[in-house]
Structures are given as structure tokens and as C-alpha cells.
Amino acid sequence: MYRCRKNQTMLTAQEKSHFVAAVLALKASGKYDQYIQDHVNFMPNAHRGPAFLPWHREFLRRFELDLQAIDSTVTLPYWDWTVDNSPTLSIWDINFMGGNGRPSDGRVMTGPFAFSTGNWTLIIDGPALRRRFGGAISSLPTPSDVTAALTGPAATPYDVAPYNINSASGFRNLLEGWINGPQLHNRVHVWVGGSMGPASSPNDPVFFLHHCFVDKLWADWQALHPTEGYLPSSGALTGHNLADPMQPWQSRGEVITPASVLDHHALGYAYDTESVCAPKLKFRDDPIKLKFIDDQGKRKFIDDPIKLKVLDDPGKFKFIDDRLMKQPGLDMTVGANRPNIALARGGREAVPFVLSTPHHSMAWAQSFPGAHRTSITQYESTIAQYEQTIREINQAYENGQLSEADMHNAANIYQEYQALLAEYQQLRQQSR
Ligand code: CU
Ligand code: CU
Image 1 (tube, rainbow, N blue to C red):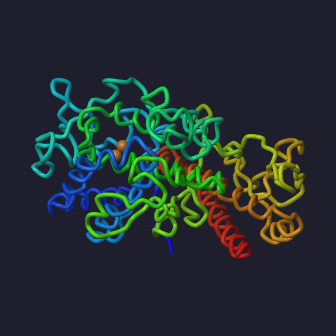
Image 2 (image 1 turned 60 degrees about the vertical axis):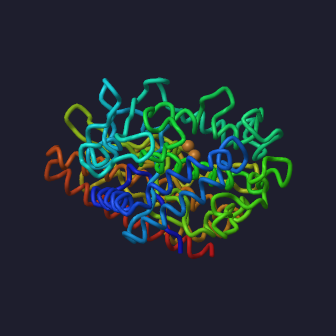
Image 3 (image 1 turned 120 degrees about the horizontal axis):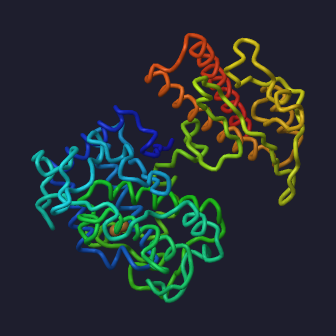
């Protein structure tokens, strides 16, 4: 049983308030400041080398467990700064992280962590939390920066000699951000600016959301490169080799090594994009795009033509032409007689397997060796698209933009969503 860490954009208002309250309680207890102290005191043990990722994984996990001791419903959210990359987004709302610093001195004036609340006095580099969005560097890392770190030519192995900021390639130094830096991790600290700059950067609670995403990227990389592992087992600074005990835990009588934190599932958590956390998932770059659009005052759902690629045997893709299967309709302009998607496309395009009937899905999954995993992934992305669509419907509803007929159709979308979830669960049970 894993606790699932979610993208912060997926948190409900209630989840956000629970998270903020737990952070404030940890601060009031004095424990929060211990994290800052540890981060300051053990900078060389935790940065500029291979242990960068394991050290922060352990650091965040302890922080999360401390929050959960205060409120068991809380998990660490992550901030995907490649998508949520502007100062006007909800992460900076007064109910969550609070906003940018004021121009004169960078002091954060809004939200739960503003100095003026009396709840957030910094004991190091204080007294007030400061931010200067885009002050020293104008943009956050992009999705293609992340893709390059995960799968580009320099993305493997985990690290290379000399195992420090001069390592010319390797996932760790790419992600930490020293190669042609500041990039990725480093760049985010610089972009937020203010209190996120110095060694006391955990002063800003967004540090934990930032590093949670960094940790997720490591987990993503591990899943993409299951045979790569960790490097080195020797030759790096003490504390950075595979079996070296890491500080400050060693001096407190606990042996935590990079090796002991490689499997994040073994630590008790997972990310919302992993199947173990289904169905609450969020994907981007999905092949299927169900979009809720405003068509000159008329709202409707469109689907982009897609062809489902199914991995038949390794490296070889097979197109599935299942156009005659029963499909849930998604065109809201048609009302009760919603059309078959395949027919709406003129019958030219293959339809997504995931929208077929459960019975057919099972038979199909069994008849194509290796396809089971692919179909599960396909379900996950379709479910994520449904969730996005439902969010957009909810938004339109809140804005008073839905007619009675629209609401009826929206109810159908919810039903289809529920049916998909049921199918998905069934398929996943089969794969066990
Ligand atoms: Cu750090
Ligand atoms: Cu950092």
C-alpha cells in the first residue's frame, strides 16, 4: 500500500488547506526549522554529487512522515514547473504557497507564509520569507529540458566521473542542473529567487514541492532505465558512493545509504502517474486528446483523430483497427443519439482500444503477448483525459455556462468515466 504523491494542480481546496495547516503546525513545533538547519549544515553531503538525489529523497520522506504524524491525510504534492510556469497560477494563491515578493525587498506579503501572519518567521536568513519570480533568470525549465534529462543522449548513466558539478553528462548532473547551468533543479531555485537562493532554501515551503518533482523525475528515470542503477560504488566524495552512510542520519545513529533509498516504493510512497496510484492520474503528451471547447457559444467535445499503437512484440508497433466496436460518444452537440466515434471520423481512423467493451478488451489483451501493459497505460492516459475534461466541465458549470442539455450530457461523461475506471481496475487485476 503506497501513499500517493499528487501533482499540486490535482489537489482539492481541502487537500491544500490540510497540507498548509500541517506545514504550519510543523513550523510551530520547531521541527520544520531542524530541516532547514540540516540542509544548511550538510550542503556538501547533499549537493554537487551523486548523493544529491538519494539525500533529498530521504530528507523529503522524513518531512512527509512528520507532516503525516500531524495529519495522516497529507502527502507531499509536487510542482511540475515545466507546466505550471507562471507567477499567476494557482500554486501561488493565498490559500496555498502565497505570491511573489514585493518589489522593494522581495518580502512575500500574501498567503500563509507571509511574515505578517506571525506564523512564518525565518530563524536563518530571516526574518521574512522572500521571493523574486524571474528576477535573476526569466524562465523555468521546459518539458523538452525534462525529456532531454530523462531520455536524451546524456541521460545515462546515472552519473559519470568526476562525480561532481564537472560531470559532463549523466542523469544526476543534468537534473541537478550544473551542465550549461543553471538548468532544471538549479534553475528553479534561481527563478523563484529570494529565500530559495541560499543554503537555507527549505525556508520556502515551495522547496518541498520543487524537490518532490525532482524526486519524481528520478523515479521516472529509474522506471525508464531499469538496468542503470546508481553510480558510483566508489570514487566519489565520502557520503556519495552507493553504500556510504549519509549525514546527518549517520551521526544520529541511523545508517541511510544511497542504496537504501533507490526503491521509492519500498519507502512507502508512489507518484500519481504510476499505475499503483491509479486511477488518480495526470499525464501530459497523451495520444488521445478529448477536448472541451467553446465553439462560438456552443460547447462541445471533440476528439483528435488518433491511431492506437500497440506494442506487439518489442520494438514493433501494430495498429489496431477496431472501428466496429461499440464506442461511448463524446460529441455533446448530438445529445442522446451520440455517434460512434469511428463513424464520426468517416470510419478512417482506428478507435482507441480502451474505449471498447470490457469483454472485448480482455480477449484482446490476452491474444496479444505484451499488449497488456500497453493497454493499461492506454487506459491510464484516457482516464487522465476524462479527468481533465470533467474538470473543464466543472469549471464551465461554475461559470454558469452549461445549459440543461449540457448538464445531461455531462452526466453521461461522468458515467463513461466511471465505467472506464471499472474496466481499468478489472484489467489491472488480470495482470497480477
Ligand atoms: Cu538541497
Ligand atoms: Cu534544491
